[in-house]
Image (cartoon, rainbow over all chains, first blue to last red; front, side, top):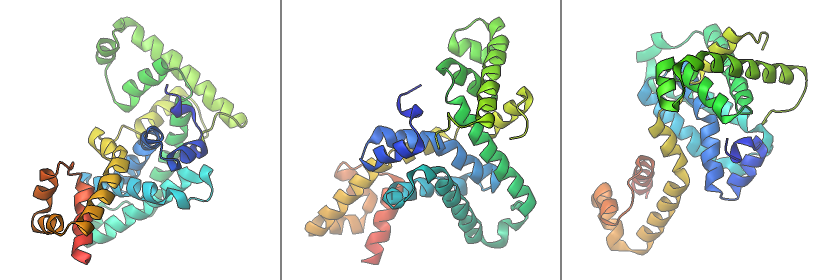
Length: 186
Length: 84
């Protein structure tokens, strides 16, 4: 895990404002999955429109970072920006894709799930690099035991037990967050 | 979050797959692209020949001068030149 990945959002914003390009890379890395999922899973934008929104979100974050009054509010700011730009994109496309637009209730449920998933990712970021890699490959990247075993050069028979151990650690971390403060990057 | 069983955690991890690498890289290159943009605009304001070359064929002029043709830089330059 890189040193920057342990920074809070507020600390990351401060470093980005100071022109630290590594901090900017971390900011993009930290929020790229979230923005991508809101565009594609939440608003069901086409890949082309999703890419435009994705780049526009980060362009605006980069150019308007100085205007963010509460540095810890980076996540809600990015969330709001992404949602607004998705809606603009849908409006720009006109009615031709109207049938593909998610219903309001479905959209709200999807966005809530994406937010919940982001919280899980934040908890994941506190685990060891090995656990992060293992769980990300298996769940988020949908890789098989065989692929994980080959790419990480681990015996294939140990993958399932390692995943189970890492899941258990993640569950403990999440339960700790539920019970009290700490660990959040917000 | 209401439940922390392994199945639910697995489901939530699947909700956030990685964004395409190219998209992430392009977003990470924004500071460099922005810096190029400012430099190109400043040069175009000071150098009439360069400005004319940009207006005539933006991508070719950028390539000739060794600038990386980031799509968003090109789009932004087109927008600025069309406004001026």
